[in-house]
Length: 248
Image (cartoon, rainbow, N blue to C red; front, side, top):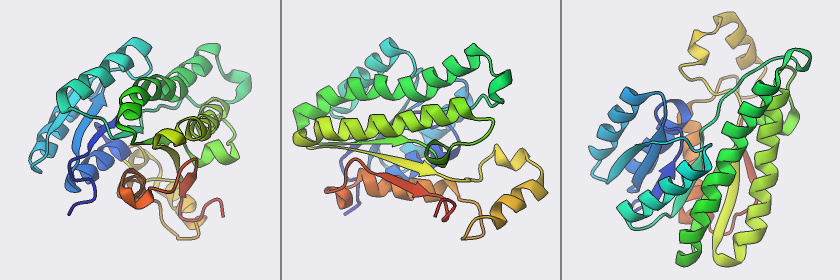
């Protein structure tokens, strides 16, 4: 039996990178997958076709999770289309890096809107159907930067630290309803974005990690699969670092 057989998952920001790997891993393990994308339309459509080829139901939604009304409609549409919502993964996020002295108010507000408010929007909408089911797994993507901070990323670090506090609070609020709430904190994960960076810089980052390599999107997807499945039924309110020992 596949780990997510007959479960319905919603993954935000899934057209590429970590989100795409999570959606694929979930489908491979039998989940019906709804996912969102925004600007990457072609990649979103390609992912929908790829997921459907794995003999599960899959649908991509062009939806902005940082918009309260859109997030509310998204969750309602998914429940109508798929019949349930068992797993929510808040993966959508952006960076707008700068030193505090040069950071604009817009750059601060935008990061909070996309990274943090999107979690509030989707979890608020999803907790209603999950409470009716008396079961559900909420997984919010934070970052090691949310745990230790990083120069030039005060807005990003604050948004990701906020996700941790939010995740733990929701675990306390919804635990009695059978709903689990956990966070994953990826470290240096090698994606299309890091592929554009200087190789020497990237290698120096790898060398500083105890496992001596950058993470793969699949490493994060596997941790996500564990938290989404019944293998983690007694785990809630936790932050799992997927960082190769970076913060050990």
